[in-house]
Image (cartoon, rainbow, N blue to C red; front, side, top):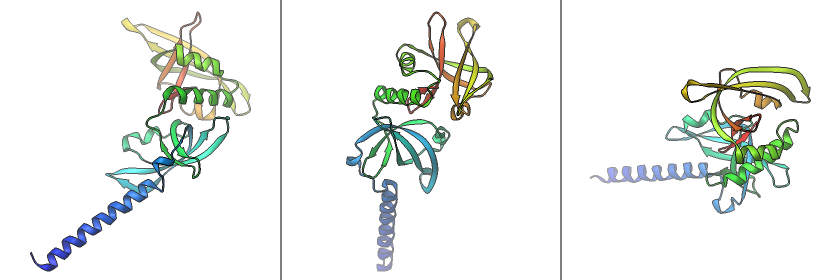
Length: 229
C-alpha cells in the first residue's frame, strides 16, 4: 500500500474518532452520572428536537417541572435519545420519573426508579393540583386496592360547573367482561384542561376500579409509571 493510502486511512480513522467524541459530548451535555443524586417526578411542560440523532433516533430536550419534597417545583432539563416509536408518549403534562443534578438542574429519565415512591409523590402532587378531584387518600386506595382494566369511553358531558381552570365533567366508560358481558360505570368530577385533552369518546383507556358497594374508577395517566386523573 502506498504512503498516500496509509495516510488516507489514518485521516479517516481520526475523523471517525473525532465524530464519535463529538456525538458523545453532545449526547452527555455535560451531565455527569455521579452528580445525578435527586430523584423526582417531573411534569413535562416542553419538548423539542436538538437536531442530533443516533441511528435515526432523535435526541430530545425535555423541560420538566420537578416535584420537590416540600411540594414546590423546580425546572429541570433532560436530554434523552428517544426511539421514534416512543415520541407519541411525550405529551405535555405527563408525569415521568427523572433523576437530576441539583446544581445544574440537568438530568436524565430515571430508568431505575422506585415505582411506589414515585407514584406516591405524584399522587400527592395531583391531589394538591386538583383539590376538587380525588384526595390523596382516595388515590392511595386506588393504587393499593384497585383493579386494572381496559375500558372504552362511551360518553363525556360537561355539567356547566367551573372552578377556576377546573371543569366538572361526567364520564361514562364501558368495560367488556367475560362471556361478552358489558359493564358501564359513570363518574362526575372536576378535571383540568390537560386532562380533558387526553380523553375522547371512543378512546380506549387504562382504568383502575375500586370494587366498593358503589364501584368507582380512575382513568390512569402514565408516568413511566402512572397516576390517576
